[in-house]
Length: 90
Image (cartoon, rainbow, N blue to C red; front, side):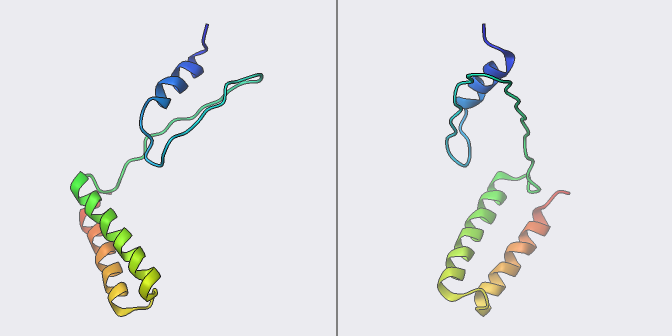
């Protein structure tokens, strides 16, 4: 008979994880303790979050290419932060 923790772990493994896949090795001895949480974004709208993510990745690419002190990179970073402030529900 499976323990409740093993059942929850197996159910969780079937869901996609944003950062990739995870692997849980079978328990051989001892006690397995698990903690689950659901993070909540400050930006509720899915499309707004997607645009903020795309803008952030574009800024990171420009920072690598032009440097953090480039005027256009600094300007885009300011726009990024203002959009988060505008869309955030705190």
